[in-house]
Image 1 (cartoon, rainbow, N blue to C red):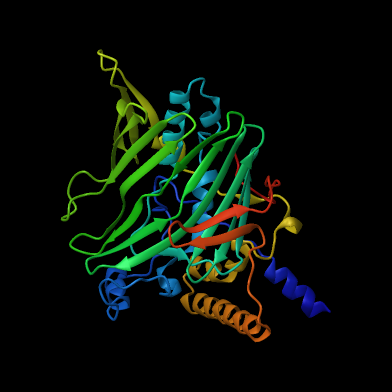
Image 2: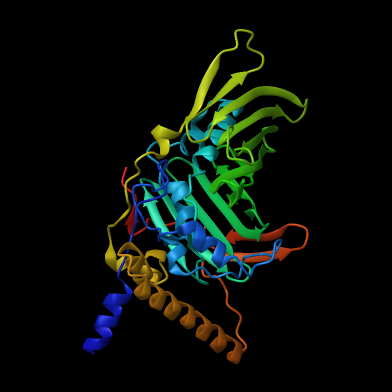
Length: 387
C-alpha cells in the first residue's frame, strides 16, 4: 500500500517552468553544447521535403514543456489583458483593432535548436488567469492535433482553436504550417472572429534562427470587416526586416482599405486611418508591455490537478533537462513513449478507438481537422497564472 501511495505522489508531481516571453527564455540555458552540429547530425538521414510529424527528438533538443503548454501560454501568459478589450470596443472597428492586437500577442519568440515535447494522446493543460479559464487537450497523436477551449464569462469572450502542425524539412530550413482555425467569439454581440496562424520557419543555413512568417487573415462575417496581416522574416543571409508585420483592415462590402498596419511584432505595431489626412498613427500593440518578463504559473489546488496535465505527464523529463541530467531525461522520455505504445496495443487488441474527453473531433478533406467543445464553459483551473 505504501508503494502505491509513493507512485501516486510521484505521478502527481507538477513541474511548471517560465513561459516563453519576449526574451525568448534566453535567461534559461536548456540547450546542450554544439547545438547546431547536433541539429545537422540529427537531420542527416532525413530527405528534403519529408514531413517530420513522426520525428522524435531526444531530450537534448527539448525545452521543459510541451507544445500544448506553449499553445496555452500564448493565450493566458500575458502581462496586459488584451483579450477582454476585444469585447469592450464601442464600434465594430474598435473591436476588430483590439482583436488584431490580441492576435499579435499570441506570437512569441522561440529559441533555435530546441523545441517543446510532442504531446501524448489525451494530454491536457488547464490554467486560469483571472476570470479566463483555458483548457487544452491533445485530441490526436498521428496526426498531431491539439484543441483549445477558453471561456471568460465575466468579459463575454470565448476561444476555440484546432491546431494541426505539419513540419517539413526543406534542406536549409524546416517549415511548420499550423493548419486549422482559431475563433474568438464576442458572446454579448454574437461576433465571431475567425483567423489562421502564421508559419514557423527554422533557418539552418546560412544563419541559424527561428521566425514567424506568412499571411494571417482575420475575418468577422457579422461586421463585414477583414484584416490581412503579413509576417516577414529576415533575408536569406539573416539581414534586415526580421519580425516585421504589415497589413490592412478592409471593409468586405466595398473592398475599401480602412486602416493600414505596420511595425514589428516583438516591439510595437501601429495603425493608421487611411481617411485621416493628418496621418495620425496609433499604437495597437506594445510587446514589452504585453509579453516581457512573464511570471510562472503556480499550483493553487494540488488535488485538483489531473494526471493527464502536461506539467505532470512530463515532470520527470523536465527535471532531467533542467538539471542537464540527459541520461535521466532520456530514460524518463523513453518510459513515457513505451507506456503510450503499450496503451495503443491494448486498445487495438480490444478493438477500441480512443475518444477525446473534452472535445468532439472531425475531419473532412475540404476543411481538414475540426474540433468542438463538449462543454459550454470551462471551470476554474487548479493551476493559476498570476496577474
